[in-house]
Image: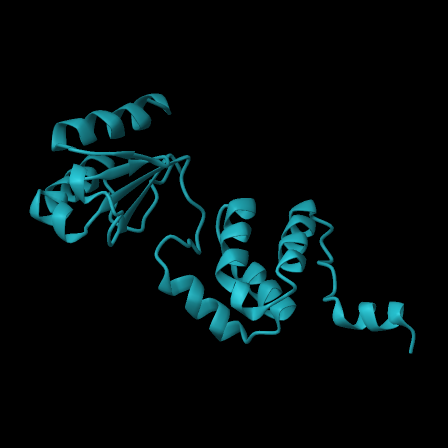
Length: 174
């Protein structure tokens, strides 16, 4: 058996869809030498590329890293920042860590739920907004903190949160 045959045997099959995002995901897994310990990094890249982690994608990752689908699914569902459903155009993540909770995170969360008419983990029917929570953002000094489209905003009040959410829902951006 020559070296080319050995390399082909050790390289996982390419995704049959021909989607270029799978090629980028393959490059990420190759960079990590298809190590099973790189699962979280691979899931992050997959979510970055596809927006969320659908079952077909999780199976592809499991096959490529030679892991059981249940292990990949378990990791993807354990960490709350991985999403198994499409997200809205905007995301609102309310920190529910101890400092934020003490300073009113629960009230902020209730405000967003009432304003957007969705609950945590849901997306508005028009796919404009997704509401998530985080156990702790590590921004305790600016509690209560909310992440609007990846930007951490501290010292939030129900009025500030309502203004941001209503701006997104009425105008699509704010």
